[in-house]
Amino acid sequence: MATPAHTTQRTNPLTELTLPSLRSRTSAKWRRYSSDVLPLWVAEMDVAPAPPVREALERAVTSGDLGYPAGTAYTEALAGFADDRWGWSISPGHMATVADVITGYVDVISMLTEAGSDVIVNPPVYPPFFSYLKAAGRNVIDAPLGEDLRLDFSALEDAFRRATDGGRPAAYLLCSPHNPTGVAHTRTELEQVATLADRYGVRVVADEIHAPLVYAEHEFVPYLSVAGAENGFSLMAASKAWNLAGIPAAIVIGGPAAQRELASYASSPHHGPTHLGTIAQTAAYRHGAAWLDDLMAGLDANRRLLGTLIHEHLAGADYRLPEATYLTWIDCRPLELDEDPSAHFLEHARVALNSGPTFGAGGEGHVRLNIATHPDIITEAVRRMGASTHLG
Ligand SMILES: Cc1ncc(COP(=O)(O)O)c(C=O)c1O
View 1 (cartoon, rainbow, N blue to C red):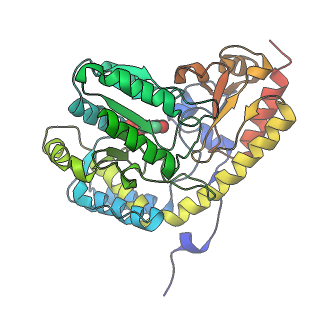
View 2: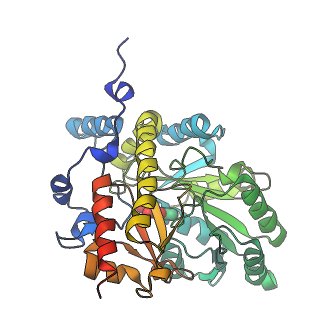
View 3: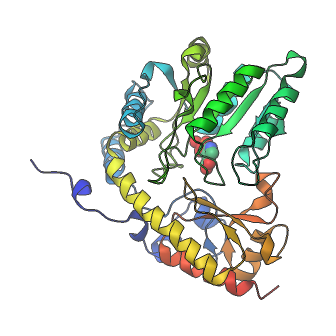
């Protein structure tokens, strides 16, 4: 029997596209800055679609299958992927679809808490953790990561205590794996989270959008698979790992002790995903594992390349290999550039990075650099960054 081409040819998705073809893209990554800037900022990847995703989208567009979403294919596809990839058995019946991950965590936290409730986050963290929750009338409080960039349990306990003081409902928005540090929380750490949350009655909502992007020597542990996490929620999507931010579709998963709340959410009027997003993300989970393996091999090479380049051109900057994600977190304080080195690198190196301070406490002097691109682009960007440290 013939095997599809994408399972026989091992290619690096990160070396398929050239700079001129990327420059013709119209998405945020390639349009925010002028054409002399190398964009290594927002979490888009410089890849062509995974063949099974492209084929599913082509089929839908060609046949005009562009109506409203229906059925349970997407949640079933995630259940199959979770079982194959993480050995985690989760019923599609414990899931509900939602427009995108941000909408999902805002909706779930709004349901679990009340106006003015405290929501705990771990800065430095993905900036929309602050902005969208504040817009939803929640009070965001910090439990900063430790010096080692991992969860700091005494800071977490202190925040849980303050948040629940007086019996108010509170939630904890956990980023797992963590954006921007690339930390993959261990089972032991997640069990400790569950124990603390149970002790203080804090509801845990885990944003697990980066879950498929864990490097081989580390492990993704689904929060809802750990002991004590039964009344937690998780948000998942294929959009980061298969580069589908333009056609989002996300899934809310409720733990066994959160099923009544999940059912009430599922039957409430909320924004659902588009049909095209659902088709694409279903294909990714169902048939995209081989492509994901190739991507992870390319990202693994890129995260190591970045280490070599930093050593060569930005000696002193502190960079630790990420355990997960294509987002890297670089401490530029030893370079004595600025509180926001991204402004320096944009002006003097014409390289666009994410600004560390926008990730909250602990972001000063840092930048986030996206390695999901051609290695030649990373090489040129870091060379330019190194040269710029003698300027300005
Ligand atoms: C941790 C995290 N959550 C959510 C999102 C955005 O998800 P969505 O586009 O589905 O709202 C991102 C995007 O980079 C992210 O890093």
